[in-house]
Image (cartoon, rainbow, N blue to C red; front, side, top):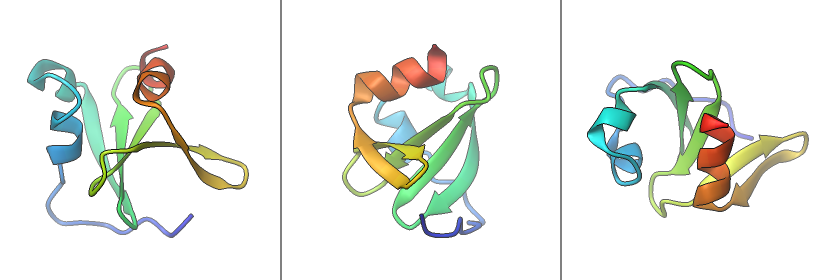
Length: 79
């Protein structure tokens, strides 16, 4: 995984394309790693990783990032 790059202006577009505005308010922008934007849910403290160019979802495992489906990613965050 590439190091996280601090970005002055949060990029909310990938999250807004997936969730309602009410649901987006539950997340904090944490930065990005390459093209993957990192959001953290305020209650569960779990991360949602979304590629800002493709809209694909990822999970971080011991060997790096692996692509997962939208439903799996949201189940992880809210589960």
